Image 1 (cartoon, rainbow, N blue to C red):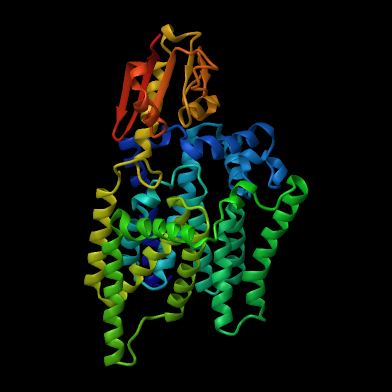
Image 2 (image 1 turned 90 degrees about the vertical axis):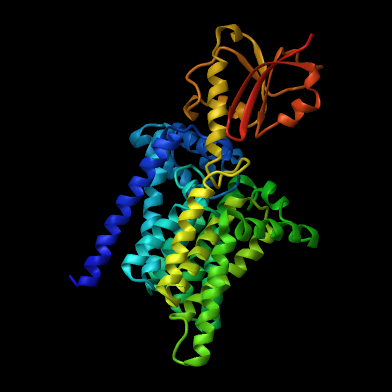
Length: 468
């Protein structure tokens, strides 16, 4: 074994060990692996995995009711259900399994950076990118965006390493995690077209076969569900300029301005500028593997277009955003080691300073505050005085009571309702939450007596009694 390969293997082992330490810290700080499910994870993705666990695992659309699949491919739900079958249907198993998948993603992140960067710096860059709040917060939960990012990293690594069959499989996995991954074969296809490689076996394997595979899935969905794509999602596509501009602004705000990325991007731009100056002075100088950066530019451009047309949530952009970090890391390294050391300092600072934001988000750790208040108030509702009482609460809190396997309760002895209309239901007890419907309470707080308040960070929940 060569010294270079030995060092690379050593750093891979160190990387896995470091990731375990990171998760150990999260467990100590947030009780990470015992956290119940929350928000979309609570209402859709965990419910779909639990449904498969109870009713049978499948990969075809009919394996799930469409209110749980939401018309998406269901590969991840099937994998989670298999983990539940093997180890038990609990949030602990779900989070451990998600974290295991994420460590695989960290290895691919390292291997991708390692194509351009020596092992020592590749290790530090990979681990500091991994601990950025937008990625680490998503790495242990049952949502598809970070697994999609992992499949995208795998596809990019195998493509750049000229391993077409492995790349094809990674692309198929990505598409069967979430159909928005279609921009991956689109970017590769456009890159190959610009290099006059359209009528080639490589183009067929990397563009035609993955797209045909996901089209076949949606054709089956049409025969089983009477639609190709979920009608709610297609109704959210907007082609009017007003909505395109609004969604581009949301994309720009999150990708460029949030979580300290502006400074990171400025460093990347400065690094490219320095390389451009070098190229003018010395024609032999220039970015190594510039074709890889052309592919990155194509991919980011398609990502911006996709996010501007589609319904936008911050987590939807993670499988695009991670390549921005990779690109800045590589170009900084190729400029000078001082540039990459500066980048590492920025990444470490951002990981600590932006771990929690000022409002609810699932792309940092503020969601742990939301979970904590939900747990606290549900535990309080087990009070004997509330037995047999009707308690009105809205989403997301009421979703905590849909399924005991969600991690919030074993049994309850009150009646939950989501109807706040006093003309239809004469309940005495009401709950308002932030995030949720706290504004509704402030609009008519004179009608309620505040009984109990729970707060954790930005999040709060109050139990009120209606004034008779």
